[in-house]
Amino acid sequence: MPSFPVLTAFKLSKVLLKNDFIFKRSSGSHQTFYNPKTKHIVTIPMHRGKDLGRGITKAIILDAGFTEKEFLKLI
Image (cartoon, rainbow, N blue to C red; front, side):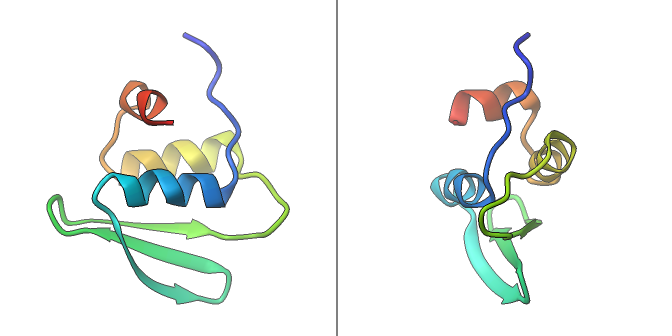
């Protein structure tokens, strides 16, 4: 399996929005997304100019209800 990619918060939010998540709210530099079908809530730190680490990206996609393989197909 290839290594997990490094993503920006903007790219990750675009993937979530394309997969039934809606923007819920913003608090400081964090944005919260909600999926009404699965009832999953995900918060992404939106720090401009910085990539998300692989660990935080994996944690976010697991919170969103995706497996790593499913997520790799989506990006």
